[in-house]
Length: 264
Image (tube, rainbow, N blue to C red; front, side, top):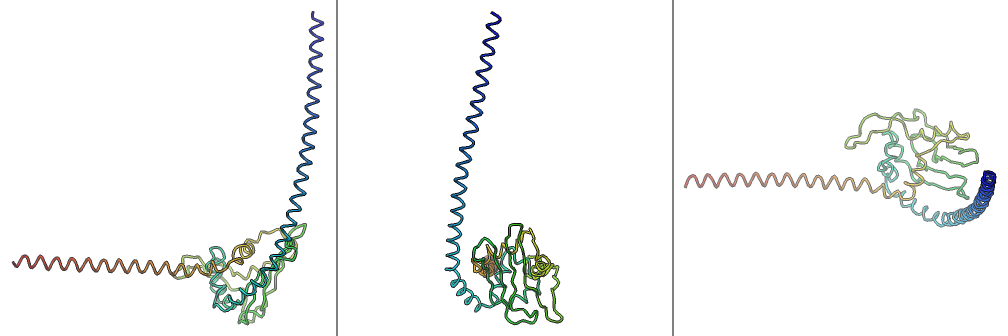
């Protein structure tokens, strides 16, 4: 009886071992099939990305003349880019008082992707002749390579007696914004020192490219909206003052009526 029991145990263990091997084999086969599916999806995703890039390239060509037309109109609006920058919740904090004087000479701003879109883009500031520097164009270029991002910028040729202006550490009258302590134009100077491979995250460039450039009118209009709001607030204050005057007049009229009643 004992021998039979031992034999049954060995048979059971062998069956369990075979089942375990079968389960492991089935699992391996399932994982391999799953990997094949993932590879197929990856291939489709790569094809989709290429198609998206083709569409973007096509529409970049379509947008170009429209952007050029927009720049012509913007150039006829005084201080457009200065106003748009100052009204932007992130970019406005970067301009010193001296920067704001320089920004008055901007006649256009452009953001242009490389032809294949994936390799990088350039941000260009075009200036009218100005008393600050010789350049009429300042460019900053971001080139995406396999081992990092190469950043290059136009060296600024400051005129005699000019240079990177120092910031002002106080609040602008009528504006709670803290003025920048460092000139916006160090954004170009920094790149001159970092025109080798660099992994830095340039938040200013991304904000200009992804937020300001697509629709700068949104931020240009912000200042007008704020003025309207201040005006409404002023009207409310004036209304309150008028109401107070009316209340005082009503009190005076009531006092006169009481005096007349007393005389009677």
